[in-house]
Length: 90
Image (cartoon, rainbow, N blue to C red; front, top):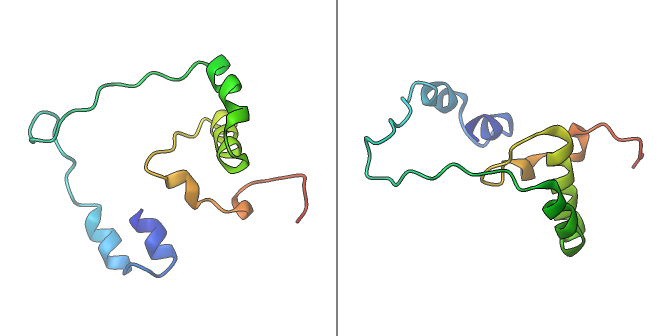
């Protein structure tokens, strides 16, 4: 996220560099609850659900499935059309 902000000149570069030195949280060493492991949703469930999604959300789900990208916390929403190869011209 910081890298994204640096690239768009929203965050000073030095903040990104210094943030790399922050140690990760250690499991079981904080009061934060541990999240359980999550299972992948079966393909047949995704296929049956797609018609009920907006076109935008359905497209995002399909991109995730085709690329294997795991999107968390809206990270996938920052992609722009220039990041994808497409046979369709603008």
